Length: 423
Image (cartoon, rainbow, N blue to C red; front, side, top):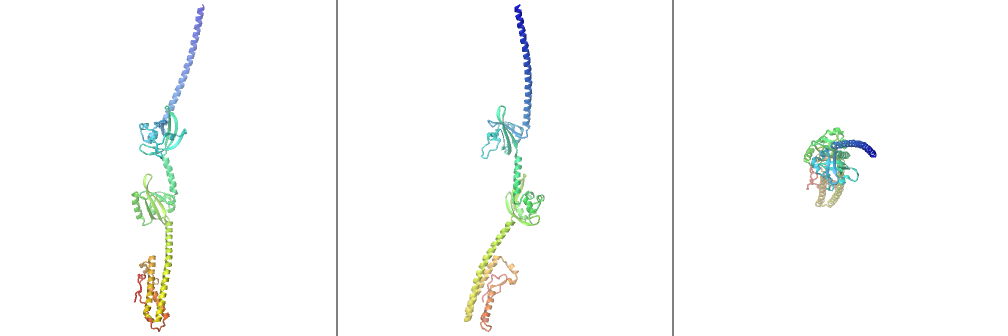
């Protein structure tokens, strides 16, 4: 009886253990099911997230590089990268990121640490080299991240070439408008493509009107030959400098000095011209010339006065000598004194001729002068002698009529070069 009771107790205990194990098995099964469901949900989320990341990566409008940090090798990239650089996928996978970076100013390559820096995210501008050698201005946004179990650099590359060009154009436009001289950009036929505000103000045309004009419209009559010669030089690629007479809208003439050279404007051959107004400079040059001329005239007048003073002294001395010899009755010796007066008159004639050469008086201009403007020093000497005879000899003196002064009357064309003839 005792044995049966022990067996029954053991059986009951075994049944209780089995029942407990079954309950634990059910609990464990439920936990595994819940864990599996959670894992499947997480996996699904990861798959969706990866798909989303891949979709974003593949369809991003900017180029994206994934670069192994230790070696600098490009391990992944999106299709936009291929479009940007022009390489094939197989070519890029065999290259490092340094291969597509332009060399630094010192000719050395740019290293990955120089791109990453010490910040977790760094934005900077670099220049990338395409497969065909073209350089692209790019803005790099770089950060570090784990990719396929490796520490990698993720670089978002934005092409800013167009933005840089716009910035440069804006800077050039500011310089273009800040120039104090008129500036023109024209096509090869001379039609204006662009002008600055100074050109509009100087020539008096609104921009819309000036843009529709050509350089020939600003040139004065008779200047087309100059423009034709300069056009031939410009078409041969030379830089030229020339002066051009122009007319403003109001008809005011002005002389400009043009500095002109061939350029490329909006992808087409064009001509850049900078015009400098020479009006003020020409006025200053004319004033300097007039000042120099007046100075020379003043110096010459002083010299002429000195020479004529000497001549008059000689004439007066010879006249005194002639009077003294006449008083002494030495008629033949009196002739020598009169010849001295004649020589002094000839020297005066030479001085007048030099004055004529200095002032550029031409014979045809002399023909138009009135007779009162033409004089002869020989005639003046004769008049002086006639006056001397009246003072020194009474009308009844026998020598008065014997003193004569033979001479020739010069014509207007030879008044300064023909000396009086000797009798």
